[in-house]
Length: 226
Image (cartoon, rainbow, N blue to C red; front, side, top):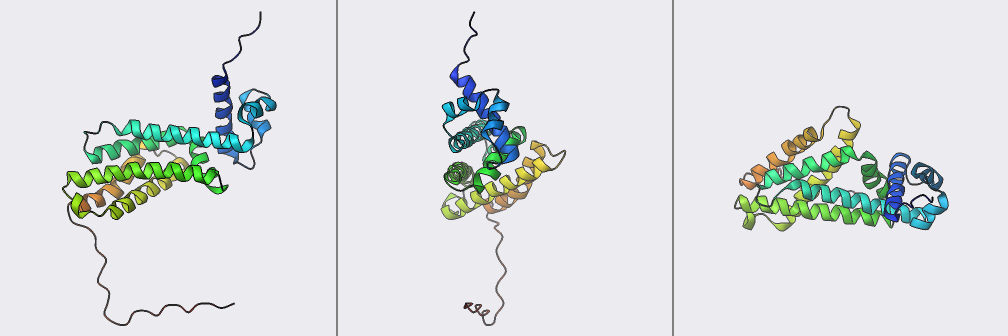
């Protein structure tokens, strides 16, 4: 009796799982198709048959892990009727929970793909743009709740979202490398750092730079000549 043939989708998922682990732990250049095939329990020609090349396989891994991360964040935020700070808290917890549970996937997205040029960097730029846009919506919603929407410039909202996403990325790396830090603790750290400041901003208590001292402006440095 012939053994039942494994469905292509299941086999491909096994290959992608093996690729995430290998790329995440060894890096793109050090990872080999032999290693990935062995870990997946298939032949190297079958990996090439399904996923064409190492570059195509890495791209498929990036897209799958990016989709999983964004879906986790959107699902974690909760219903639209929640207050903006609660939605942000839920989203941060979902983000840190996902990155903690999938360290190899996070390594692929945040470390490996960024450092190996196109087309991988473009995939990560698209992922980050989507997350920043989502966070921008949350901050804009908070401004509307605080009746600050007319007074909070769109560019400032976008800048706050960029800063918050960048902080979350760095904190995920720190949490992953620091023993005993939970997703809840990481999310609370960022909420205490970011939302307290956002709360003052929404309450019309922004921090303002000190007045410049009177006197001549400092001279611009002279251009260097070769």
